[in-house]
Length: 456
Image (cartoon, rainbow, N blue to C red; front, side, top):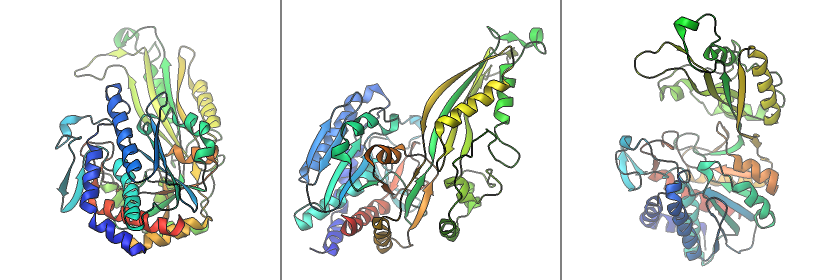
């Protein structure tokens, strides 16, 4: 059978595919909330049954947390692993949703048909583009494409505590020539991208403690140390006037952007002002000597994600707080060592803490950056397949976020990952009124069929 027949089947079955996605979205698989433990398992069972119905050998694997779902097609060809996650984020604040987040529907959004509901874009809709491509392939050819292993996780939105032990315990079964990951997005509307580098992530919480209780600012102000002032000085010292991070050794392992990649990124015509205008901003605030895409994709960052201390309620309370705290995250690139950066950061903080204060540190995870080997012919084959489906040519792109699974696949399973997704920046993932374009779902399904015809 020809690829054209598979694509025609995808087109003819679009409504049925959307109905299946809506069924999946109705399951409130919120992995972070223990009240949804049974619902998260129900989502795993739903996936297992769908894959078994396609002729796969499908299994649920219990873990200390939520289940893993695996399935195999059992065919010949290049051994490929496809990864997605079936858990979703909490829906708060519920009052900002225009409909029940677990009563999904096809809706209109400024003239565009969208699937509205929690998980529509992250990651159930993305995951189902691949499943539906396989379904159409089987309907036309009688078999599933190639030698594919599916791995669907139920804890991605809650830190993946069971993932590394599961990968280590199943290394022989899961290690393949290539992994496909669907948890990314388009570069721009109508223009797909293949993510070839992901920033790593390091999280730190710093707590500065001073007096043994809150103090009256009139009775003690000027004489007693204020931990908010100490914390503010530490935070302010993290960047210089050009936007560079000042932590000693922070840029060790940060590579220069290769000339070929720089040329390709420059050709994308990225408009930083337009990108920022969508959130009410206008001016890039990173390193002044770097382009906007470099700042987003290939340069490390230090960001303050939250501060607490003193009184911040209504009215006014004149206190010197007993403690102040900040949560700080570092996005990492290249060969930066998150553990070395953690120690260097802590040394800087300790040096700045005065005698009357104590400091506590709380570790919030550490994962290095990931870079893909695009010399693998499958990458160019996938680009060519995407170019056949979308209005604009695909590109190799970076991603500002962190997807640790790609690093785990490399370090534990010794395989590179190809990250291809079809979401958009305005899909409102993790936020009220999450959506996924019907066009993205449709073209994404067709894209996977084309890619599988080239690489499976």
